[in-house]
Length: 333
Image 1 (tube, helix red, strand yellow):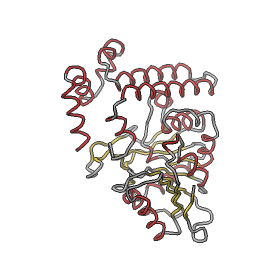
Image 2: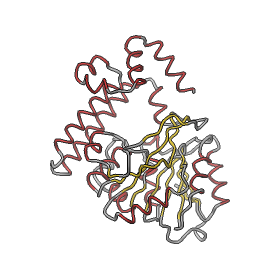
Image 3: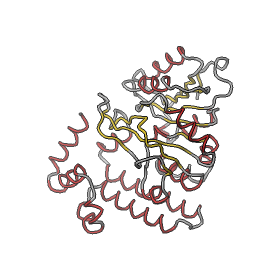
Image 4: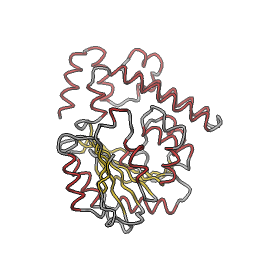
């Protein structure tokens, strides 16, 4: 690992550390970095970016930003791709390097849309010292054009994320909205949750929501998630040849996570966690598009699926060649 920075020009005691991971995101990374620089905040910040051996020019973009803003940027590079070795760059490199009292996260293919985002979240965290984290609504956008596809809101109005949703949903917010106390993040990285193979987003949701003070939601759109962007994990999983195998592994990892949460909380939330595990079972059969099992075990829940999800299930079951064609067309939009 190499850290490219100008220590003499960096804020000696930043209040907020912005953490960003990237790999081969030349088409998107400048949008993310510019959205960080656009933040209207009156406390010192730092911006740490981990580049996982990009080969498309992303590294050069990062170094240019560091040269132009040496008082803000710290760029982390490697001689070997870390993700392919099973290493989490966010947890292994960026979190230990972060010096701020708060951590804001955004991956390199996403971006923030509201210049007051950090200021608002810092205010919420200052007013509620007992909570671990703060999140907000976001937009889903088409990766290339940034055309809005949908708006994702956890609730209508500001509120705490409910226990039932923490255990039943693998994600209640976009990662690019997460603003967390540094001590809570370090507690998570030192906990039994961090080494589990489940998705980091899901592990943080459970740890911050159940173990460490809770998560507050701001009902205001302040970030954008690029749907199926190039080189994203979700795109690779969706179009890869081993979708069913990946879905089974994801299912097993999520169940293992909730079983650990049950033990760590002494069974206090056992009934809620059991309902959450049932939701994970449903999500697995939905991911592998097993319409027969969904109809047999969860007919009412299946009826609540949106029209696109139901079309997806129908085409996969009864017209698979057409489903494959439609999926590839959608991913090229």
